Image (cartoon, rainbow, N blue to C red; front, side):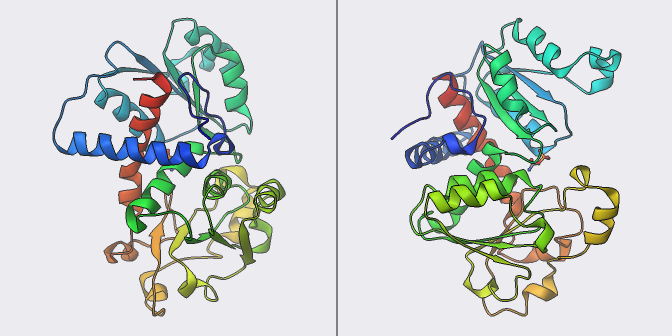
Length: 310
Ligand code: CP
């Protein structure tokens, strides 16, 4: 069943069906080939995307902006808080209401408040894409994660994915779990200190969808079972400083650690990384996180194309 349609708001990865993800992968592949052939695409000419990031971002903000420009469209960015009237105390809600009245074709929004993307979708006439709402979700990250898995293995069915790190406050974990749950025989191994284990609402969805998952505190016991190890950083900005200091360094993936295993899975990370994935891992052929970030460009080009009905 297809649920991805022209003009839709994308607030949660729960909105995507298997056929949506497969369509998106196919469109992303087509666009990748066109870009790699050096084609100048012009299908979004005259369309305007407004990007409003009320929280910092490099990959999501810039890959969305590059994606729109590479499709031939234009981008208007809110810019940092100090150059907008938010510096005078205007709310994000009033900011969005105002800019939406200027007629963007698409609004991409990130905010620290869980549920903010849904609120933005209610405010804006233009379709809204959630580029991350607090600890809640990051649906387009999940799309590029699954696209990366598909590019490596040629399938998503049956993959064994270890998700490691801050599984409680990391929004990529919920969206990736929901997206993977569309596929057959997927196994998820959550690896984290107990107090950073996944939120109940995420496990509930996996239970309802009969997805096999297990919880671990250390990766040693499962490493050689995994096809993918998806490492995430501790979400410092969503924790009390004392909790961050206590948990800092409680899990860390290094080259020497990985070399202990007879089988090393592909290593993904939504980035940015801090201390949890050391740079000496980058030399391994399994280190795919920069390729993963690049896949964000094609995934977002595909999503823009489908939502604008181009
Ligand atoms: N993965 C991700 O969301 O990165 P940014 O915070 O840089 O956008």
